[in-house]
Image (cartoon, rainbow, N blue to C red):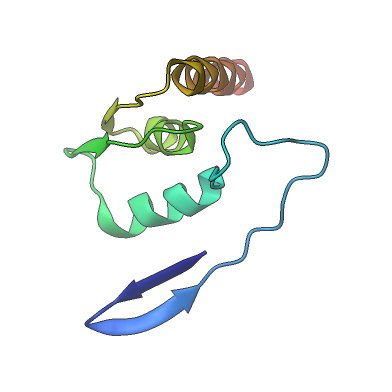
Length: 97
């Protein structure tokens, strides 16, 4: 994945695929990528809008970061899969506290 800006040099981030874990969306990105973006560019009083929710990685990262989040997904199957993934991730977080 690459992050670039007109005003700054491009940055390249490589996140190896997780073995044995198949994505639920063809363009699924790692939660760690969204965590990096949020830590760098967001603050606690922001509300994050993802108009292409996909697998829900952005929602999980936003939850971990502690910001309000709204996600939209046209495909009902992807939405349901993202919701299940989010529920699983937040349940695991609650158990580890």
